[in-house]
Image (cartoon, rainbow, N blue to C red; front, top):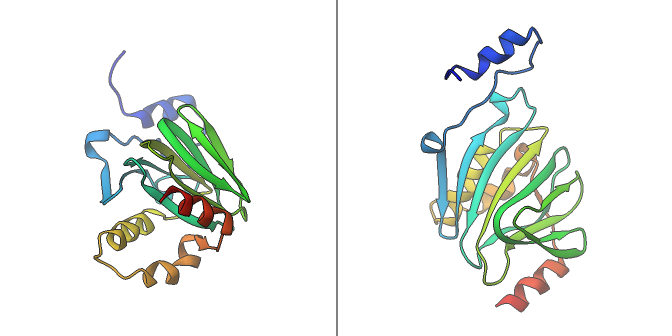
Length: 177
């Protein structure tokens, strides 16, 4: 098999594609690190005609991923590559294990963290996509103390990331401490 540009396959098929194939090599992917996780940025909406945004997060043992929040336009997809991820969906908390898949529709409160005593490696996909890489970069800066957390609240509409209070999620986190 010859090594060719993935875009050639689309051109050869005769079908009109909404965007060129996206190939992100691991060695060339941008990463955003904070004290508890590393996010590998794979494909943002500008490369996919707003079709999707994808990134991979590797959480350290016991790392808190995201507080309770929802999206008004995007469905968030989770695929656990390895480890275990504790997830709030609505008012229910469950643990996703390696190989598990979860799709959280718009307007559904959710939160996630590495399960107690576990690391987690997770692929996240948002569809439709919308420039979320700038949000992930901001989040990393806030977690490292390089930016003010108020910037996250101010960006809620831009990034379709709306934080909510969840007594269920708070009680789960309090029990873990």
